[in-house]
Figure 1 (cartoon, rainbow, N blue to C red):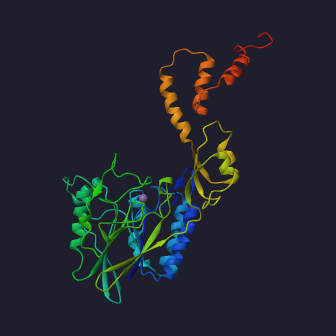
Figure 2 (figure 1 turned 135 degrees about the vertical axis):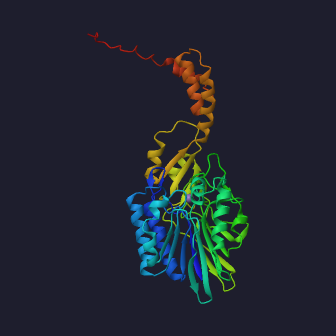
Figure 3 (figure 1 turned 90 degrees about the vertical axis):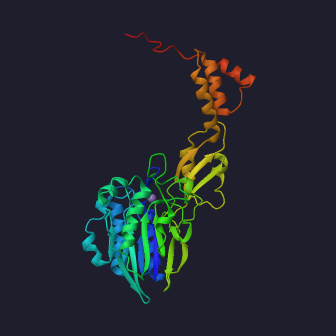
Length: 386
Ligand SMILES: [Mn+2]
């Protein structure tokens, strides 16, 4: 049996105010082709289908179109669980009816979920689909107030789900959690304020394959067969170096798995570029496409005239500018400002000059400043006010 494991699509996400729906549509087209060309038997989407509980209409339309092409036209079943960004109830709408059409959605937690049964030429496969476990919901669902955290809640639900697996069958689990030992990225919403919410990898042992969602970097956890597919595309500049992929997982007759990560080709890359404004306006750095989503780190120390507008003439998708030299100077200036006694405009300008230019004023510059006319007194004019 060949499974396609993907997760963390975050359809409808805004990246620095820019909608990514067209980029996401481009990637879902690629997945639809891959599912057909790789003869995938079941598609697993391990949560965070949408970026928020009430997704924008174009994100819902995009997901609908994917499902119609895969579960509908290709007849390939799709298993979807809710992640921490999804609304469990909205995602789960119509689930009992949709299962007949090959769409298996698990939104809200169930106390004793029955496995979803699949089969290939070697026999049956039981699939446990465990949506994101929110501890208050888990405590209410299981009627157990002693389940204190994510780890205890996941452990209890997995024990109950495992009890319903039929002996001798191969088994697969789909879940959305922060499994201890895995590494996170900038764009995941923490499950617990200040971090944490970890779940021990040992709770997932015993399944032939565990398809995880939540962490945005593709990675294995503890075993080759416990994996995060990673997000559909980078959702922060901190992920610029990640190569995003989906996993094609071949499940053999004896339950052993072979994993083939397939890199995705985004419409535009997310990159961090560094240089002076003049150099970047003069030439596009090697390996960068002008249309990429860019964070530009300008190394200039002096004042710059409208850097964003000028950069966007050459690079239309610059989303953020950083000026490390100025930010360091501004930190120093802020400290100085706290001890500000009444000072002359000349002294204040000199501080400003140093912060912007990263050097002291020279004598000639100080002289030039002295030659400037003092501003007119406020309200001053040649006409008498009436
Ligand atoms: Mn996510």
